Amino acid sequence: MLIRPTRLSDLDQLMILAGSAGVGVTTLQANPERFIKRIETSIASLNGHLPLGQASYLFALEDDETGQLAGICGIESAVGMDDTWYNYRVGLSVHASRELDIYKQLPTLFLTSDLTGSSELCTLFLSPDYRKDGNGALLSKSRMLFMASHRERFGSRVIAEMRGVSDEAGRSPFWESLGRHFFKMDFARADFLSYVGSKSFIAELMPKYPIYTCLLPEEAQAVIAHVHPATSPARAMLESEGFHYQGYIDIFDAGPTLECPRDSIRAVRDSREFQSLSVTQPPKNATAWLVSNGALADFRATIAYTRPLEDSLPLTEAVLKRLNLEDGASVRAVALSSKG
Image 1 (cartoon, rainbow, N blue to C red):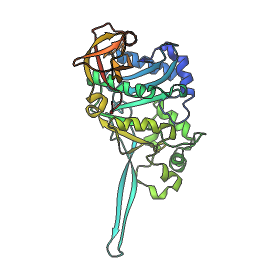
Image 2 (cartoon, helix red, strand yellow):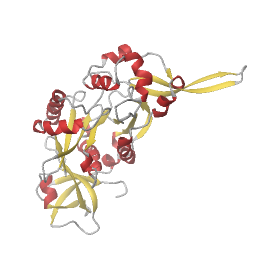
Image 3 (cartoon, helix red, strand yellow):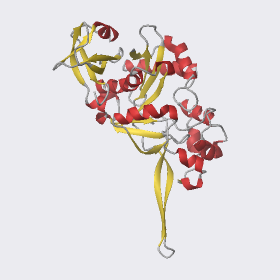
Image 4 (tube, rainbow, N blue to C red):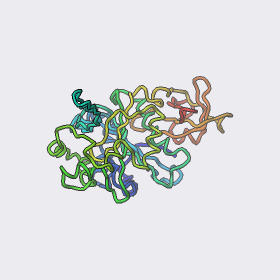
């Protein structure tokens, strides 16, 4: 399996992936015009033609034996630099009266733009047929290896918005209890408008005052900062890399936003550059490593079973071919798992 930048020729397969993702994956809408624009933006970013606030990167997971696309993932270099980036911050309001001997702590939602300028891990989706053999880890963590090679292209804080709870029909309890009262549209429509950049309606229609969560139905309160069941593995994977929930949620479905300083992400912090060493078979006691060619426009990443030898990394000819490299070329690599 191979991670590489998306191409315009991937459009048909990307539409199939997007169509199977369902409602709630905000940045993965089955809209061909938007996909073409995102791919073109990614290509321009990889060629160094866009400033930080406009750059974004879109990568595909390809089965290099069949040519089939198995997944997609992306990175936004800096959110909120052109359009306002909104989240709810979960705070606490204290109400007390000594005379009445009353003391209450009430969770409260504040509309903020605190995460402006952060880099965002986004658009993560893996085809159900390929949810095995470490493909999910390769898809998600390859972005971290890309950031490790090109740190100047990203902010000092990295965030990931997790998909919130919704049912099979795409109904979000949080949206039905709060957002619908102000927007008069269903969750999928509001989510789509936010995705395509029509975000002014958020500032125009959202309440400007704090919202006491105790006034929401129990069904809505129960899903705040919780993820969709299909997103639980992605959350666990990010948390294993150092990401944490710090009190910010999505304004539509209340999914948690995870964050981590860029240089504290395990795959960024622990990755190293090695000189590749061509071998006919993996060395003894080999474990799974995430390996990339460190390139920009021609970025490639894959999983290799290997074991470092001081400053060199033994790689089979098949792995080198996948990375478009010759023997002796420089690679960036990190153990696929924090336990590896």
